[in-house]
Image 1 (cartoon, rainbow, N blue to C red):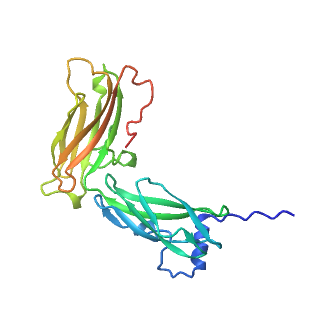
Image 2: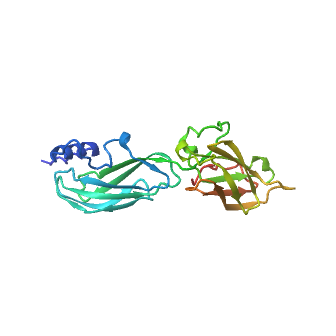
Length: 270
C-alpha cells in the first residue's frame, strides 16, 4: 500500500494555522509589517522604508531557511535566524530606497525552506510614498493639470526613442514635473535650468501652475536630417525644491533608417 503524499497547505492557510497554534493575541502582526494595506505607513520620497518584521514558522516541523528572494532586487534583507522550530519566530530586517517612487508600494519576500513538503514562508511589506517632485511622461492627449491616471506613465526617468533621421518632427516627448501641496516650495515649483550637452534634443520648460512644470523635449533645430547613431545621454533638470534640486533623466535615442520596422517600448528601462 502506498502512503499518500502530504498535501502542501496554501501559504495563507499555513499562516493562519501558525497564528492559531501560537495563541497570538489579535494585536500581534506576523509575516507582515502591518496588519493590512490600509495601515501602510506614509514616507517621503527621500525617506527609505525600514521595518523589522516578525516571521513565524507556521509548519508542524522545524525548518531551515535556505534561500531568501524578494520582488525587488533593490531591497536589503537580513534574517536574524534561519532555523525555526514549529511556531518559533525570528525577525527580518527590510530596507528599501524610495527615490523615484510614489504612491502605494508593496514588497513580497519569499523564505524558501529546506523541507520540500512546505511552500516558502511569504512575508509582506506595505507602505506609501509621498513624492517630493514627481516625474511623469505624458501620453498623447493627456491633460496637463494632473498626473497620468495609468501608473505606467508615472515616475518615468528614462526615455527610449527610435526615429528616422529624416523625420525630426517625430522626436518629441512631454515630461511633467509636479509636487503635492505638502511639498510645494514657497512661490511654487520652478525649473531653474536644464543641463544637456548633446546635439540631438532641446528642452523647453513651460510653467503649468504653481505646482507643475511641463518640459517639452523635441529635436534640436538643424539644417538637415538628424545624425544617425545611438545616443545614451543624461539630461539634468535643476529645480528650486530644496530636497530634490537635481533630477537626472536618461535619454536613449536611436536614429537610423530602419526605425519603425521593430517595436520599441518608449518607457522601457524606467
